[in-house]
Image (tube, rainbow, N blue to C red; front, side, top):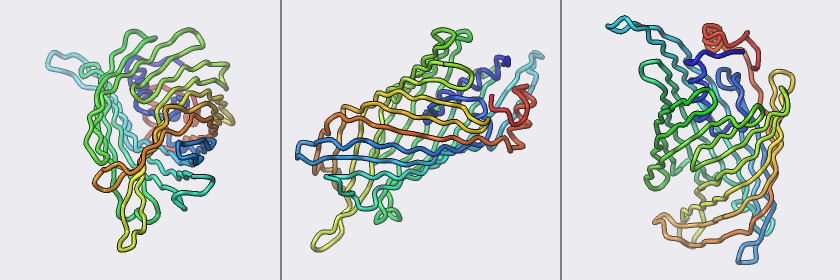
Length: 326
């Protein structure tokens, strides 16, 4: 399948914008899809001689809500093609930390988030991606009195031939305090079967294509959570917050099955781990550095071709027949 430059540009922008993806496929970008994932981090020591462990299960979905190609003429009678693609992304996760094998908090943390990504590629305005969203990570006791986080940003892409692309921009994040995070990405083909992709400071990935149905990812990334919980004091209930962060190095084996399914198994090590709790005034109460520990994860992604919006869009662009997972 050959893609015209406008379509290729749009696909590359989506590649950089979907940080959650472990494996990129065109059908994931243009058709509704859901991913179920589970991760387990082996308990390891913290300075207080406690073992800190963590498990995570998550649901992640992407649904296109607008896809169109427009053609217009300028005053100089020059043709300008414009492709616009808008995605709604949603995530729900259950995180369960443990200390000495005891679930703490008892029912863990629940994360819910919703966002919108708009991609725009045109001959005149070049390549842009815009996005924004909100979410929260809370326990059962604080779920209905949350401290939400918000994010929004924009990025510009430059293409240096079909083998190399870069993207740069910034993201504005509010999570108890306001931060501006500069973002730089690169996508580079290193050979017929190798490709390197990085979205700094979040992740880096080197992909090796074994064949049409399977590939490997060598992954480095930053992950964690910031969750609110509640403790019972003698006279009142106090709000607390727990922040956890780690850097991971891993390898993932990906397989494409039965046209609509993608299965991935991942394993590796985490290090540079930080675990901190603080009160509503943002005063540190505890701070730990858990020892490095291995992890394992698995995910299943289902992609459906039942979308009239996407089918019309891909048909106009000549991307392939309806229902094909390219």
